[in-house]
Image (cartoon, rainbow, N blue to C red; front, side, top):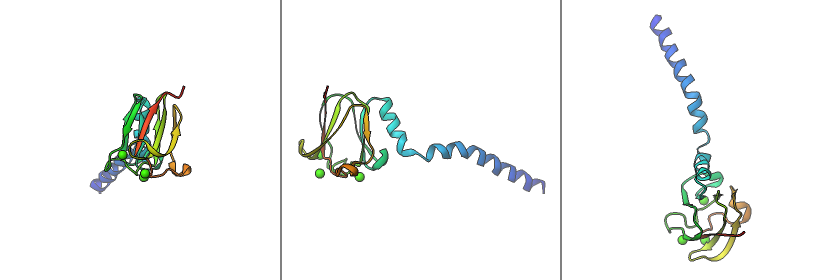
Length: 128
Ligand SMILES: [Ca+2]
Ligand SMILES: [Ca+2]
Ligand SMILES: [Ca+2]
């Protein structure tokens, strides 16, 4: 009986330890976005809400290409923690339809702008 009591005690302790860990794991989608903001970068995400694989992670103005197997037609949300505008292009080589996201802002649902799984290249530029 004493052994059973002891075992219950261990389980209870394990549950107590798991509570804060579970709280952190509950929002993995935003962990990357927080890191992106801390680094003042632009980050492009495979899923909505800053989830899935993360592409981009740049902070200097310029023209960038998403890779054919690493972001093309996959991006569903964007965090822009830079002071620049980010323009997404529907095709490679900065061509096709565009969607621009302002400085220090994010768009967690590109589907709302008819731009889900559409971007293939992007630019980071000074929009004053
Ligand atoms: Ca591309
Ligand atoms: Ca996607
Ligand atoms: Ca496309």
